[in-house]
Image (cartoon, rainbow, N blue to C red; front, side, top):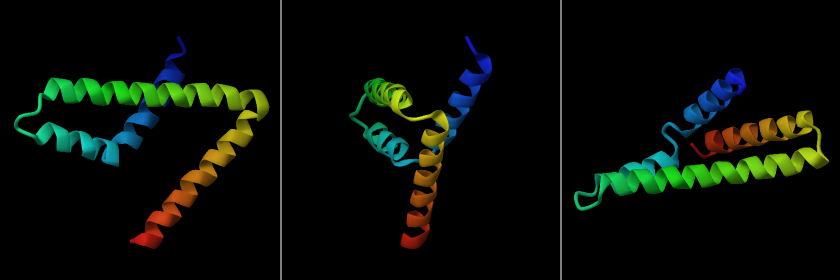
Length: 90
């Protein structure tokens, strides 16, 4: 296993997920007194795993048509566009 790749992906996804709407929704469900924290944890974990699986499959499919650099540039432009949108709405 490529430990450097593992740590890079882990760090990127972990930082991206901290404080996002997914985490806020999970906190909302976990705060319900009648809700099982274990069920909330398992459901939110499975949802993140499945979303990541879709990302891996989509990335693998795109890599057959586009070069990695083009995908990286498109992702960067997407992140910048979202950042501009968030600033504009603030």
